[in-house]
Picture 1 (tube, each protein chain N blue to C red):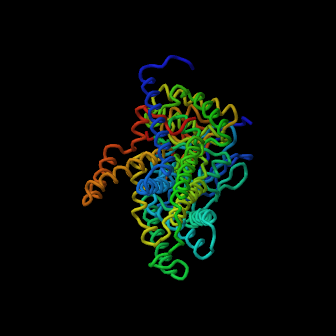
Picture 2: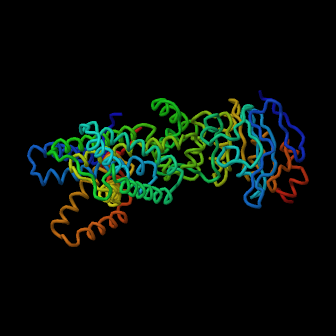
Picture 3: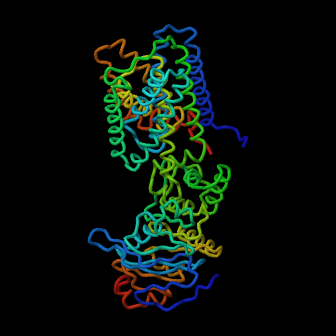
Length: 251
Length: 322
């Protein structure tokens, strides 16, 4: 299932390929008079990395919060593996196989790195400890397993949060600005982790302003502007789209 | 790993041995007091055990999940009245009455916890204060059953020794449950709720279920303590068993000892009971003011409590181990 061919940049309506693992249909969220996410639709195929970009305040984070059920949508539907998750609680959505990180790390600061993972790992205690150790090892944080999360460097905190998402082995992973404030070494590590996981069939939706990394990582770009879907398609084509340049990249 | 210990680790190991020894000595002394102690000593230690039961049970919900309840006395009062009514009106034997006290408190925990735990931070704290006050008023009004404001008189019995050990058993069970919770992932999940509830929920932790579970278990132990208290003291009235000062004491003891730890409430209640008794006998007129100053000093200088202070220096073992 690596059918991830470049597709032309399309306008307004996002494409929903057949057999999409995550689908968003007509999703809308208002805050008072502001429409943060306006009738957004798209679908994502399993085993791909999709970038979600747009200027600040374009609705990326709100969209993440809606998909992960941190807050309810006013209208529209979200489907995971064809099953509606629109009215599920956040913990249910996570248990169904959709995990996410936060723009600003939300770790449990007074707990150690290992404890941060064990706390959320499902299954028996012994099993949970093993899984947590494996996840720490995967992101290269095994040496700081017993360090309090609060004492880790910013980049390490980002990696720990990444490991915390991975520990329950979700199929769809939403990363909210994983590269913000991360040094180049850590960036490189994160990119290689994402590639490795994609090759194992994991599906990613990533927002970030590091356009260089987004271009390198993603086989598809979705652009939001003022809560609306502005473009969707092959990164090179999207990048060349006049409206996208106007709204986001500038000159 | 049998690598030789460095100086720090040796100091830590020594500290841990001293801590374990002190706790064992305290437990041993408390266990033999009924055999040797005067009635004054027994009553004093029994009071301390009761405070400890309240502190340790408060710690289960508030220390771990961070849901600070200002209404913990509600469950103590409910337990007192449940046992009192079972004995007076139901003619039940004390052990059964005390079991009913625990069960009633559990039911109350579920009933009030379900709506109250939707509130967060100060709203939950004050909400629980309101719950305790509302129950106190309800008990006062339900005069035919509860005796109203005049209180409820139980058949007087000399049960100080039995009640003493019953209270000790409640304390021991609460500490054991806390130890179990702290050393299993469920303890980490409760702490994750305290640290960041949204991040806990979004990582699949079933926060509502866990909070409600911890809250009800906490209520059970407070209810059992209330039941034993009523049995031993043989007279209860709403203003005593629903007193806000019971909650404040439990909070102060837990904070002094260290919230979210296993032995924090025990250490805190031993120290605070001892200190307030010493102050009360020496400075009868200003002892509450002195206790107040002490509590403020602790919050300022030992925000994590004594246990965490010692843990951070490696002198005593951490509460949780993986």
